[in-house]
Amino acid sequence: MKKQIQKELVLSGVFIAMGLVFPIAFHAIGGGGPVFLPMHIPVLIAGFFLSWPFTLAVGVLTPILSSLLTGMPLFFPVLPYMVLELATYGTIVSFLYRDLKRNVYMALIISMVCGRVMAGAAVWVLATFFMAKLPSPILFIQAAILKGIPGILIQLIFIPAIVLTAKKLNLSSEFGKSV
Image 1 (spheres, rainbow, N blue to C red):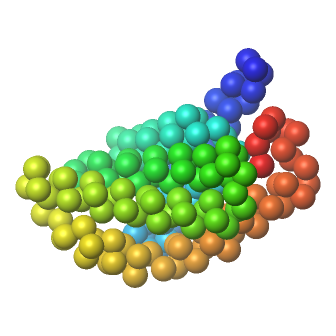
Image 2 (cartoon, rainbow, N blue to C red):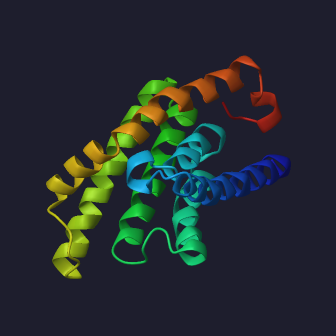
C-alpha cells in the first residue's frame, strides 16, 4: 500500500511537470493553448494511471502552478474554470476507467464532456457573481469546442494509443494497479 502511494505520488509529479512543459512547448512552436489544449493531455493521461484522488490533485495543481510560474493561464478569469475543468477530467476518467472498468474511449469522452460542462458552470458563476467578462456558458462551451478541435482530435487519437500501448506492454505491473 505504501509503495503504491509512493508510485502514485511520483507519477503525479511527472504528470504535473508534463502539464507545465507541454504548454510552453506548444506556445514556442506557435500553437496556442485554447487550440491544442496541451495542459489537458497529461491530466487526462494521468487519469488512466493514477487513482482519482491523485488525478484530482494533478488537475488542480497543474494549472495553478503553471499560472504562478508562467502566467498561463491568466489568473482571472481563466484559472478558476481551468482548475475545475482539469480536476473534473482527471477525476472522471480515473473513476470510470479504473474503478468502474469502462473502456478507454468511453472514459475519455465522458470525462471530456463532463470537464467542459464543469467549465461552463464555472464560467456562469464567475460571470454572475464575480462580474467576469465571459460569454454565456453555452456560448463558452461551443466556442471552446470549436476552437479546440485540433486539441480534441489529438486527445482522442493519442491518449487511447498511449494507454492501450502501456496496457499491451504490460506496464501496469510497473505502475501498480493502473492501466
